[in-house]
Structure formats: C-alpha cells, structure tokens
Amino acid sequence: MKLVNCSICGELFRSRDGEICDNCSTEKEDSPYKKVRDYISSHHRVSLVEVTQATGVDGRIVLKYIRDNKVSLVKGELD
Ligand SMILES: [Zn+2]
Image (cartoon, rainbow, N blue to C red; front, side, top):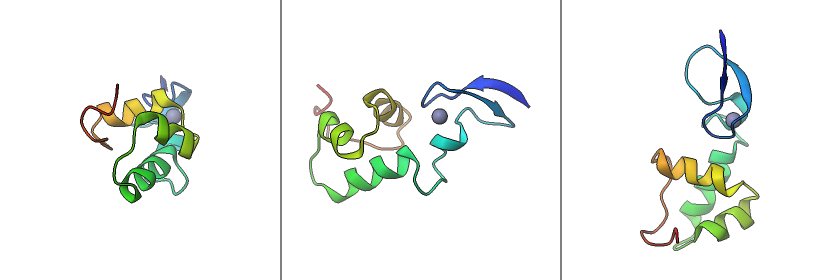
C-alpha cells in the first residue's frame, strides 16, 4: 500500500493498485463517474457546463473522465 493522489479528484489515498480513489471508482454506485455517464447517456447533446451543473461534479473531474475516454461529449462541445 502506498499513498498516491487520485487521478480524478486529486485526494490522497492509500492505493493497492490503480490511481483512482474509492470515491471516484467507476465501480461505485454513486460515484461521480456514474452520475456523469448516466447524464451524458440520457441526453442527446450536452456541453461540459451542462454536465457539471446537472450532476454537481467538478468540471476538472469531468474533463479527467473525458481525457481517460471513460465518457465522451459531442466533439467540439468542450469549448
Ligand atoms: Zn478520487
């Protein structure tokens, strides 16, 4: 076990493997990831701002999911 910064939210946590903390784990039922993914999948075209406002998830976290290809917005909507 070692202390690492979560690559999603930046919080320090003890990691066995991986770089995402339990709170941000894509396995967790109420994780930011699930909220973001569910919102994007149930809306046809959404912007980053809409996602952050609707889900309450920090834009930096949403961007991280996008960069990691965990979720995707319509191309060009990031600006
Ligand atoms: Zn985290």
